[in-house]
Length: 89
Image (cartoon, rainbow, N blue to C red):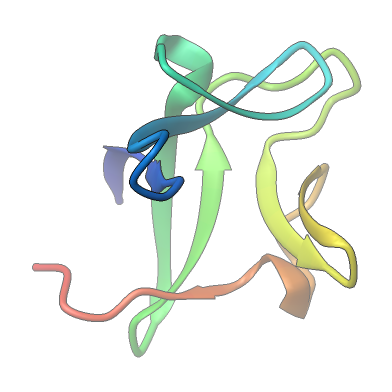
């Protein structure tokens, strides 16, 4: 398991921002903190579950991708909450 901070490049005008949550949902912003820190839990073959170290007010902590975009979910058991991350040591 690795602990990481996720940054998102928002284009030349905004640059790099941090991905985390405040209370209930995901946010992308200039600052970090405990709820902007993530655990990478390896499942094998470069596949990971990405879990926030702080659970939201609604009991969610796993990063998932649905039809409308990223979201936090309460369980990392479904396909939508598995991420391929190549090249990690």
